Length: 128
Image (cartoon, rainbow, N blue to C red; front, top):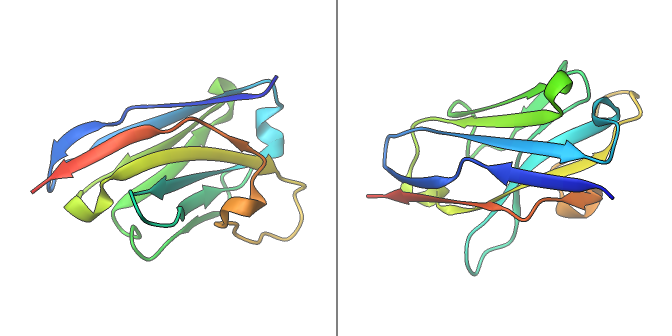
């Protein structure tokens, strides 16, 4: 079975940094686009970043552009999210998601319904 597992969340002060990791198993990792989403209580799930199979294309939501960086290591079946200059507004459950990447002309995908496989989430809390 496919399994997606996030780690690296925690409690940090505003201005601090965290690095999230997501490891997928049960799939051919370099056949998949990967993405990070987040969801705060009472809010819609927000797509914040995605990366295609070979990391030649990345995309960021305006809310995190310039502060967060997505990367992947296909040899480790892992995608990362480096989060810098964290703000209290970044507090949320962070989810990793995967969808098949056919290597066609790149179109960023940051809508939750576009993804097939999801992790259980890792909590990020940023204090004032």
